[in-house]
Length: 331
Image (cartoon, rainbow, N blue to C red; front, side, top):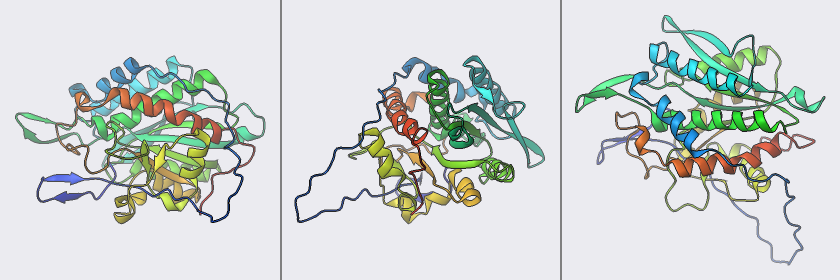
């Protein structure tokens, strides 16, 4: 999960991240403001049963907490590859795997490609990402030592998997999209650092990295569905909400306070490419108690909420993949 969460003395919990603040400019004079341009995209129907099944597998005891280099995360990698292959998502490289060394073993980023349909724009890329590793075995509670990592970050991985399935079937993206499952995030963003450097050396034309982390439960008393780290770094939230014709991404103040923009995999892509690269999440410091604990299991996740959020972010991603020019920009 995003690093350097603080431990609260009263609850004995590790606390996670936050994001940003949507503002609107006011004016004293009445103006005729044209309505936002409609994307023409209808809301997709994501299969809630598939979301549940994928989440349950990735956070099952059989995967032993998905520690990078373990037999458990290898099972997760094979599972992701099989679903990508079944849904005709091409591997970006010769295989789906981008390999790197970590602590005397190997980690594997899994990368699927949905090529763009436009002969020119297909040379520009979106990266939709989530880390699929977790921390493995920890000190036992009631004889349970498996940190299953359902919210952190099987939930985000399922979102990327469902988005890959949707865009692979729809084939309506003019820009190309990489669907990336990153490893060794929990060991210091090692997988994303390796991949970002590799893609930069290969001169990939990266437009936006949209990273997804901890989206298994809804936020409390917010007027948006998820928050965006590094909110002030770009116009991503404003444009994404405009594209969606809905208030999807918003601001959570502690994200800036704890500099969470630099503590998840998005930062590796920002550092290498200097383009908008940000993380969405729904953990809001009040709605989940089991960060890096054995209780972070599938039955704690809100499947209807997850399904709705995945559906709701599709129009924004579709529009980013289809605008004639790169409208998402760093501030």
